[in-house]
Length: 247
Length: 242
Image 1 (tube, rainbow over the protein chains, first blue to last red):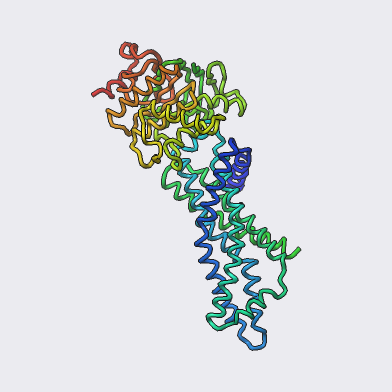
Image 2: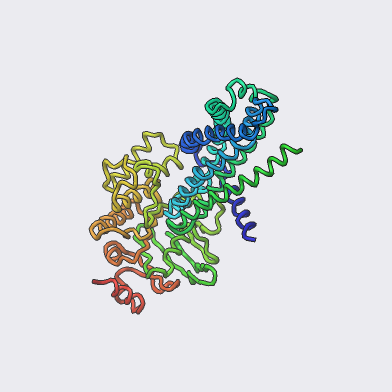
């Protein structure tokens, strides 16, 4: 029952968020600020994680395919597909749920407990819209870009680790990347990226907005934002995979 | 003028506001006093629309706030300025951006006009050369002044002050009191102050509403308190004396 109550509150929150902003100029400014916080601010961590995921997946796939029967360029192909289909969108989203999600929830939660949200309401401003819409829109713009970037870096990381560890030459790895490439896989990955970016930002904003109490509750909201974002990412990962890969 | 009539509010089984009626006058410092937990904060939240009472009416110069639709309520809210207990300044904005915020949101002023108004409001609360500082870098008293400057930026008809002196030293408290009093007179605002600081009341109180255990126990002018004969009010006053 509680789940349905929270889900209903989440939908009502979204209804309040998706209204026309009070001032377009201020909204555009907020979009730039939030895009910088969410996108540019996550650049380093996504670079590091995606490079190493590509590197590790190459080594592990190479380890499992050492047979002498299968051509080694298959390593590149499997690394490509596993990174495009799963690692880049899902791991990036899970990392950003921790970084961006907790940040959004704690920022809005702090505004709530320090009466800044009340101040907005008293001024006649739709506080849900003002505090959350720019964050959601910026997340939906920048997180898919980070996913594309993560895809690229994971393949570069895979090529470097394959070459450095002597598992596969760069030429063979690139041949594997080009073999039977399906553009639809990127469409699938980007569908996940857009869905996850909306989930991370909206779930976290909702958790922040329903914070009541003090510093302790802000911490709790931040934790809940990460946990619920991760759970919804995993759930929708399954749903989207089922819907798009086995029609 | 704000007229409160038969306002009732319950939270669960707790009856927090019991049939409260009061008049809050234009151009006067109207005080809502009472012990902590007595219901005065809930009453103020009802007046500014953060809490909706179950019954009763709250009328702002003939406009019954509780019967207005969303857009009409926003129009009333644009006439309201509020000074919060913890100031509620926006952490991410500096002093001048905080004061400029309602102007940027609700007016079509040019940037030059906005800055003129911001500097006027900051000057009015005697804050100069702090424009670029963030709330975390200024003192409690300065934050209150910025809060007042933000509250008066749009020339409100109604000014609500929730515990304006909480956390301030006695000297700064008196400065803030004088400032609120002066602004009330200067702009002929209906000012509502929620406090249990009796020194403030004696400095600037004019119309007093005493709330006790969720009900209005007394209402009248400051001069009438001593002769009110209301035991709870007198006990509250005596406990505040030093």
